[in-house]
Length: 226
Ligand SMILES: *Cc1c(COP(=O)(O)O)cnc(C)c1O
Image (tube, rainbow, N blue to C red; front, side, top):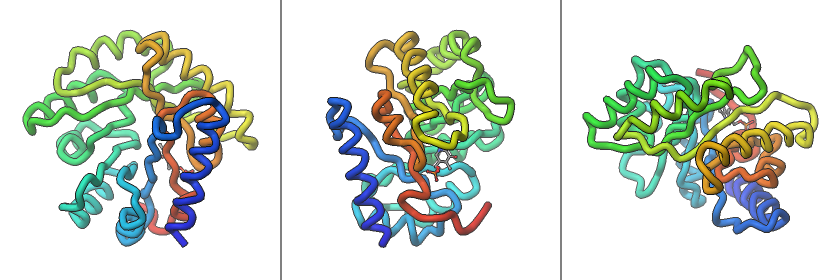
């Protein structure tokens, strides 16, 4: 069941890549396992999935501990982060998608340095200026990026966004395109772009996503809220 859904999502990722003239291998699928039992993560791992995304640090720690020792399993921190959780995140996550302010970047940098780690990081942008969402304002991106680039134990690779919750995936296209333009402006054409979720990842890929974060389309509805 889970393996079949994972396979179907992989097929859709590949088809969207091919439609837009891109190499399917250039798109990373992060399986968002928040709210799913650790057994579901283990099953997805058995089915070949290696990158998992978690929003809540407590849940990230619990799952990473339970699944420690699995070869090449990579954790992505994708939720809004508090500074006091920076050490756990720096210890566990190989990729952090939600850098949205300078103080957080500095604290993660300090913790990563102390652990001898250097996670890849995305700067999260509030691309539609939604008051309900995290991420830095597009206007503040240049100065935040200057700060992040000064963090020697973080490797900035690109931008991340959670686009507005629209009814039709097609309606999300302008936001994905806007993030791509912003990314190219600040990182050049090789900017990594973390955008697209279960509802809209195909449109995101058509607009240049290099990382898609897909939860329910792989795991089904979330069970345990944390
Ligand atoms: C929950 C979440 C996802 C996955 O959402 P689905 O709709 O289940 O695919 C992706 N990104 C972030 C930041 C999330 O919080």
